[in-house]
Image (cartoon, rainbow, N blue to C red; front, side, top):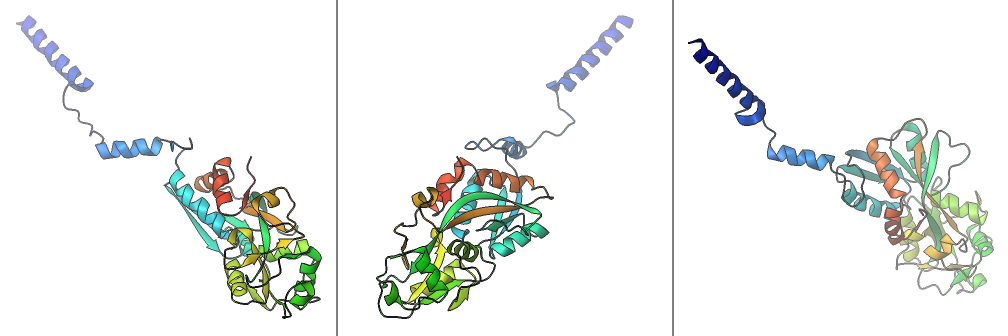
Length: 296
């Protein structure tokens, strides 16, 4: 009788062990197939970059001249990191720098370098850009020197006939104070606080549209924003292009910069965007948007 009881006890123990090892029904809920797939997706790095997938929202704000570049970068980054949303607000370089300083945006955008009094932030150059001098396509003028451009915008030269054009008044168009494009143009041409504009605009697109609609107008615009509605003239015989900006032969050029707060670390999503946008992986996209990549 004792032997039978022992055998029964032994059998019960074996059944218990088998159940605990998966041989029977477990009391722990199993992971649903869709949950497993989601977990695998979250832990799997994007196959084309080798980077770890991250999630989050990145708010960028600033230079209107960087619109084409930012549009291309944001669209492509969505494929690299589908869990990250990058927002872009075009408000001008000054606002972008201020936004980075006060933390109202993750990344400021400036189409100029920081001034000595703009503290608490660092700049990361993502590309270079030529500032094209644009006139109406009906205007026969093809080339101007830096000196002639400066004289036109300061009011010393007022008629197109003085620079090889028709007998017509010159109508200078420019950007508003605080614009990175204006800052770059005036710094290079030596016309700071001396330009006389017929109109000042808050975006590059407005300058181009104004020049396109006025046969006597002249303005300046980011090379990446120039389209067939205006004519970009040569400056000192050199046409604005990726090659001439990169080799320095085109005189009127500036940097496209990301502005980062020194004291507040970037979020994982924002850092991922900065790292990718400044890598060689983004170079073709930047070039395609009309700017000159600097990553090597």
